[in-house]
Image (cartoon, rainbow, N blue to C red):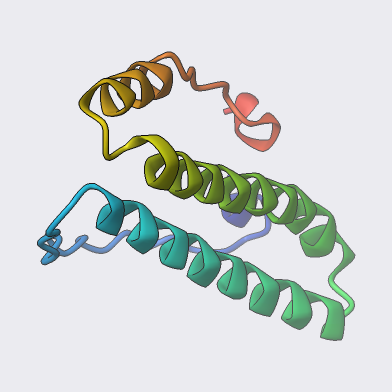
Length: 114
């Protein structure tokens, strides 16, 4: 919506099938953390470009994503820590799985108006 509201054309492309194979339960969590750091770097690059262009609307819009990435990296780090502490034990792994299953999705504020 943000792009449409600002006169930009959106083109959606195909998403490639994942090519990863993991040897244990910790590897996908570590890969997820690396991905979150990559996403953070992309958002930072976009924000830097908006700052340089004096695009104040984009800066305001991106602020939410910056805050969200802080939370996502923290969640990924917590999952890695918990897996290292408790994931080697079958009951601990079961408890971690149940804990993750209780997480609920809340529509983020920029998307709530859609």
